[in-house]
Image 1 (cartoon, rainbow, N blue to C red):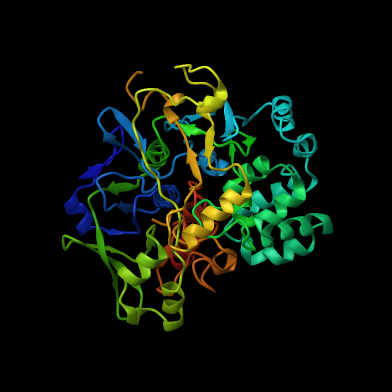
Image 2 (image 1 turned 30 degrees about the vertical axis):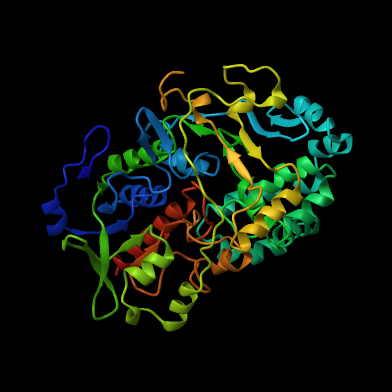
Length: 480
């Protein structure tokens, strides 16, 4: 089955796939693989994306798993998708439509109270004041959480550039002492320590701490867990910082928009095309891939959107890789305490703390709803249960109701980040020490998925960065 976009521009056939030597192949049609393909095609390369499933998108996919209801099966909200990717690939022209929620977070409490935060500073002040006047004042402009600082803009800009970590230390040395200390404190400290320093009310600290355990087995008391918190507050929706939005049509619409941009640039996308092995020549150079049906597809460049574990331990013979590199990949941490459940309901949930049983969606229904997140102790206990290999007695739950905003997805009326995000698997260490620059020990093979810097989430930065490195190498090689 060939996917050719909504307007059927692609004319590639299975026979042509075999007969043509492609400039580049991309293993996996997740959003990062599609992003890489789009940039490579825009750079003039002939590119084919090979997706194992019948549908593209990877973790950013929409499927009708219950008749009449469309679900974002894995990822569920958008904020981290880089503005540069949206702009450069013209994703809004290709169908991307972001739906900003009326409120951002809603946390009901067992004692009948609740905390509802949104976009209105005055309303947020009143909400937090129900629990702590001190926190209401601190939340307005906490000095150490000043995301508008020039340092934060610098960080966000550099995160999008593939050369960032090669120059990181040099740039950090010229930062002001205050900004550098604040950043290092957040990066290295436990989330609980950071939040205890900023605020006093249990519920506000718990609401913020929840972002630090997404996709991780680390506790909020683990040193370095503050980075995951930073990772999740660096996003934006249409210029509004730290706003997580729904996507009309579900998260698969992100992948569809990127694929439309890739096809427009000349890329070909094939579904039901499982790669079983990378073909490596006697010189140790990539020569293409072998599909599960025996089809050989030739190219001297391959980008893998699969996990590092799958790429190096499942698609490449062991003797093609250095032993120390293999050991690092084998020891990579893929533990995650995350489970996602998709359900279809006949009406919006009623929260007792909100009063009357209104059948219409309110602001609380558009927000990210936090259950069992009334204190950091609750979160810490749930994390400890998971680390002990037990189901949490009071699991920390995030609930979203996308149909409260998106009327197109319902009738009327594994590790998610391709590897843990601990301090030992970030920056220069992702996916392995010495291999953070998207290139791999196999010449011509690149990684472009969430297992590379800067990590997980529907961000598209790994795909964009890997494509830039690949294009640079391609142009250098073909200029000889």
